[in-house]
Image 1 (cartoon, rainbow, N blue to C red):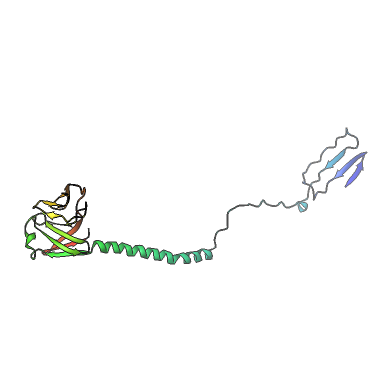
Image 2 (tube, one colour):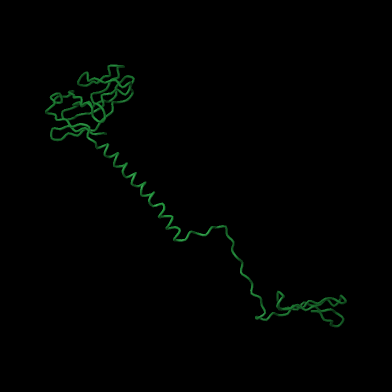
Length: 202
């Protein structure tokens, strides 16, 4: 809206459309026909409500509780099956370690009554097992297979076990001494109770 005031053009701005301020811009009197811009005070009812900025994010909305529970229910059988498999395998290893390979009565084997004496128990689940008396009340059980070329070892004396094929030597308890084998004979666990020697996997 325009009006002529004392030879000057005055342009009024609608308060509703203006970014209102409570001040009046002074006209430049030195310029003929200068346009004077008057900013009127905006009444409260005419003030425009400014929109609050909207936050924009790239985050995906989180799953609802129902979706999460369905997902959990789908995965639960697989999880339980895995736990059961590991549980069974653990007991399988333990059962194997506790498996009895042989039970030998000392009274039925006179060779075991003296140090250096031995018996060979054949066809156990771990192969042939050599049982040797290593002390007054001590026994050792080991494989009779030399780890070098799988020849059968022999008890030569009360302190020496030897491989007849390539000369590897072992102590009476199966510990490596010399020769190409470079390691001891396979050992088994020994338990003695009530005159019975029980051999299990080590």
